[in-house]
Image 1 (cartoon, rainbow, N blue to C red):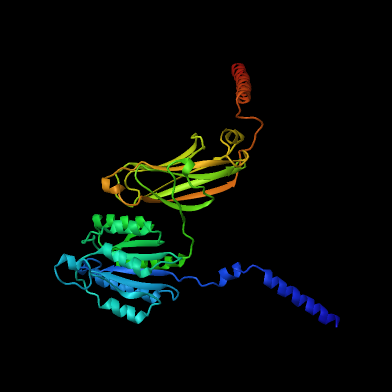
Image 2 (cartoon, rainbow, N blue to C red):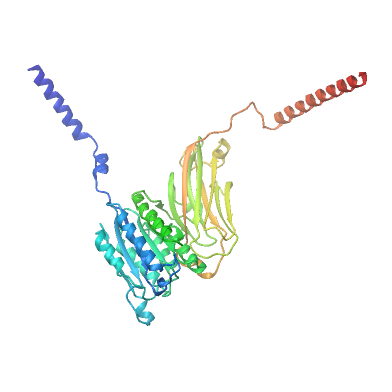
Length: 423
């Protein structure tokens, strides 16, 4: 009887705990996660007939690489394939520049069907890269995870407008979490510049492939990156034009855009026992003049500059990064206290600036993308050695040390001279 009563009490207690326990953790662990999604976009224009990759045509090398990637594709990855310049054989440019189709829809791949679709491709028409990027973005749709486009081409867009760089900037500005990686199959500087521009606009990467093995390995690497699809992206934020209007930010990673010679302001509350650490990386997604730089400043609310970090490029750098760190002091708190923190917290103003210059079109459309990283840690002041380094006490210590050193040196010299003469 007693045992039954104890069992009843235990069961009631367990039921109460299960009813009151939070369910969010369970929901996060068991809730459905969106599968990684990637679309391969292949140029099938007439130039892909060239036989300059190990004596084989560019299209045959690309087809082999696609087949190997499809065979090695993880089951959880959803893959799609889109082509451009693959069907229209005429000379009407207006018609040929519409030539882009999705031949494998984004989803779990039927490997046999996918390889059969790839095998039928023959180099044919124009190169509407911009239109194909827009189509690929629509194919991937929207959602909570990052989507990835892998563009493989051997030439520049021959159909602009739309310019593929402008399309990439538009897609990035829409906050679609879309990354475009580019692979070049021809050692051409104009092609390289365009593909770098497309990749930089969306936070992607550029690489060239001169052998079948390089192309296969690179595509596999990029497809594998889709496993990172559920990593939280930087939070989108819009900087102010002055400190008073700037958004208040907590520690984290943020993304914003900045036009040439623009200043973007942000505020970060910092206590007197804390240290602010901040960094910024800005991607050059459009041509600018050589010799440029990015500047990150921390300033007090009254405009006093506290610390700055700078980085400069010579024209060969596609990304610029710099950072700073600042610890509050009693004097800083008294000089610029926050309005609502009882002089224990101050709002530090972070300013992101650049010294870019370029043609008028370089400043058109959305600004250049950058990431701002903010962290707040416990301040770690330098050890308080007994007053050294502080004004008159340091001078006195140095003077005494100099006198003692001189006296010892003089005594040793006299002893050596006396000994030498004696001998």
